[in-house]
Image 1 (cartoon, rainbow, N blue to C red):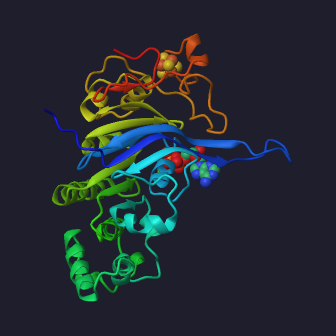
Image 2: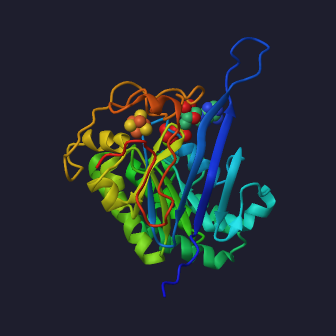
Image 3: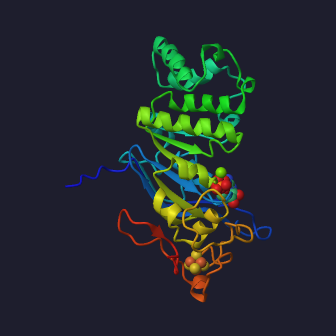
Length: 325
Ligand SMILES: Nc1ncnc2c1ncn2[C@@H]1O[C@H](COP(=O)(O)OP(=O)(O)O)[C@@H](O)[C@H]1O
Ligand code: SF4
Ligand SMILES: [Mg+2]
């Protein structure tokens, strides 16, 4: 019989709404529905690629899972524990197990701290003995391709790629289980991107890491992911294995994204060209959120929201009334 271990991360119908602008003075604020009912799971050692245009809610999803935000609705189960509304004090011991690497390491690396202190800080908070701190620090610097001579330097003395190596070293200092990578290479030169992606893959194999890999770049998501979730305006439109989603996209939005990348994409059956801008999450379109840009939209698409289906585990899921063949 197939034993099915529980996923490391289970996200159920997650919603993250912010207080938006007031339509008129004194009127209540409109909600910004940045994440509006997102569900997925990631098994131990796997990578889920979360892909979609800028502004679709990827970072907000990542920050809600990291519990840097208080979710509006839904649940986040990490390693069997419901962390959705856990207080920061309760979260503290669990935080060793889930870490985030941001797009811009300047935002996560204090510019006034030297590398030694930056990397030691998480270990000090975790009460790791001083002698062990130094040993771990040296080892992790070497592991990410830096060395001991860097310990006394400040973040601004490094190149973009080296800074991201530092951010990776810091995120891995406490041996996390889950690492959320939010566009970790988007700010880097293409030649450096590949080195950092390869480093992340090597570290994943070495330490059995599980990744949520957030990116707007389909070629990188295709390279690194086990499964892929395609997000549009706060919702998941398609979800499946990397192979299924890239070689047989069933949602017109996925197909449009793939069509836009010359190198990616297997079969070129139905090519969908994406026009217009992402609508505002303050007032998302009725029915299928993609209907204002979808070349296949029918009247039902404007009124009825398609569910992500089928519900059977292991299937390619698509939220569309007329999925592509
Ligand atoms: N704190 C906030 N208050 C209001 N709106 C926000 C806030 N954070 C993000 N948003 C909005 O939520 C949407 C999704 O943002 P984000 O998650 O950063 O998208 P992505 O990472 O996919 O580019 C955007 O329209 C953004 O303007
Ligand atoms: S439900 Fe309709 S509008 Fe939405 S993606 Fe499918 S065909 Fe297009
Ligand atoms: Mg983002």
